Image (cartoon, rainbow, N blue to C red; front, side, top):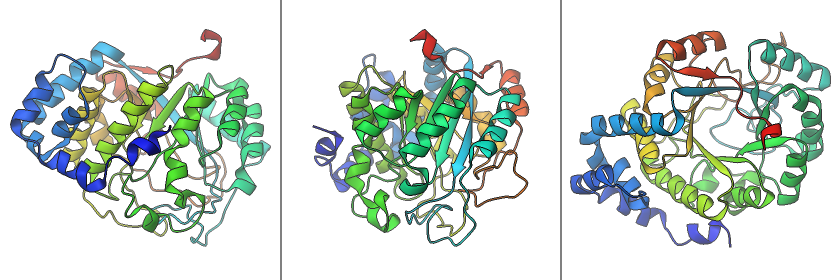
Length: 370
């Protein structure tokens, strides 16, 4: 059994009806519940009916986050290894049909990036590549882990969906977390956003977190790309996916990201507007639904909004991000994946966190503590 089996029990239309039928009574029930909240409660909290209760949701989200995570916010930085990609994704600057310069870091270039990132204080790094098995396949990723693992307390990856044996191989090399985003759970339209490449196989991607769970990964991150489809319905499927994974792979930790579409080469404008108010509602809903899940916020969002969201459920933030390979040290710019919005330095973001009474955490965990 995999999540695909459970996913096929829920149509896009049925999930939409489940969200949009909720009333104020359903929202109050979810807010006042003293036992673990279920998918129906989450659907109520992201429904239009919950908009009138946003202040109550924000207060509860704040209390639950402080109870579970204290006043800490983990900082991480992405290190882009390559913008080579064999997929066509209509929303991504790395898409193979964007005829721009490509670059894959060699060891010397990579270590220059590592030195710069370490100088900024980071101990937790996220490795990112396009999806190109020949250029940045498992052999390359294993080599990169061998090069950089001694320099960081934990290493995460956001790369192509892999086989279970490949995940096991990378875990043995020091990989601790994998972020694998479904982009959208709308099976009717998924192919239109991913018309070419391995990523166009929706079922294979849906089952990637299962392969990670069976491989024994420390943390799995999931998400939908907000703006492609109805954010409420996609988020309900993310919640369904999270609940399934927690039941089945209970030793693994989980995180949720909230990427909103950003301009990029070949940019596809959002099909659905996700306002800042919608964004706040979604973050609060995720936290109330699941007190233990880590919620990550990237530099896609503006400085002012990130400052405001810090207290509402966010546990992890990126800072000082560049989305092109060699972006921290190479003078020559390569094709970036998307434009960032918060361009503050890591030191400035850390100062903001401290100014709000929180502690920025540069080191997530270390394998010696396992």
